[in-house]
Image (cartoon, rainbow, N blue to C red; front, side, top):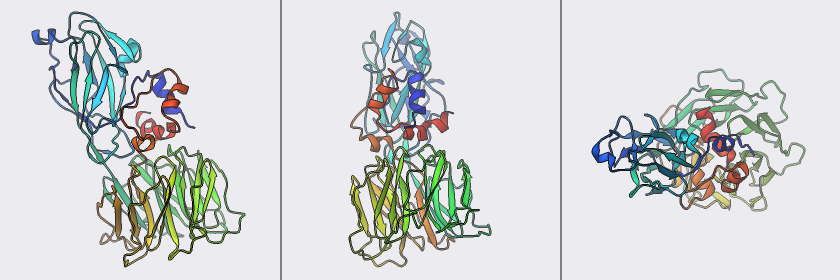
Length: 453
């Protein structure tokens, strides 16, 4: 398990890991010293005082910091005030699970519990990691030992999402908040593009060709390719590690090629397959993966668990793609007629199995919440189910034959952990933190490490 971010959290004295919405409007106190404030023992102050703290709209599964700066916690009372961020902090409202709160500048006063003497201030770090689309409003209250009432602020933020479609020539269409970073549409390709794989932070993506040639855009880094290797079978899919520090390529015979920090856990390269491999999906921690064949046969490697398959079922149409649930405890397949097969904790939200399609389905992508999915047809037609929103399609955008699609976000912590309320992670060591956040360090890495260095 990658624990880089947990180590950073612990070393910085994280007292509370709570997840919810983002923009700050001060409800009590202006931050300027006055006789009225002298009667309030501490007041949350945003400087310049009285103005909202705005966080940007944030892609599901990613993280953002506020635009203006940290929360300033000041004690304007006549006596010292002891603040315990574990017992003295509360979040409420629909976005109450969407904040990451860390002591920041308050940490040097003693970690999760610190003392502010009269007139002293410190800065709390509050970050936005939305668990759902739309308005993620919440109310934050902090109360110290000397306070007769808590300091209260309203938090506002928006969760967003987008997706990509790519054609065989490498031309990329993007919708929603998915950023465009370039494409291979104007290049003379040796082989057609077969996959698009975003980095997971809405900052870049890779395109993979059937010969394993890799084209990287935005913050996607090049770690290697099979472009100069004589392959037994063509590349048909690609998957990225949780921290975007590496990737796998899979060929139609199930041969696996691992680059960067992606590890090799096994392949079907030496197995006689009934049907060719058509796609793959990584596990939550990147320590395993699934391969899916066109008959829906599943091959699980590393820590990937087998939850079921259609390998022994007569399908109306072949399977063309798969996606894993955010917690890695289930997966979906989609067939070329849009028929959906759900296993493990993956839920069925709908299909096009009984709809006459103009063109066959070629790919699917899952919502970072696990509550829905999209299908793309070869003509760019887009079908959405569950909480996956329709944001547009590649139809009429100049795309040729679409070969793949992907969401710009990554699994949300809320979906991974099934957070019922505020999750608290005490800074008493990595082992303690891991009890609160099992198998999530790599996802936290994806959300934070590349943002905070």
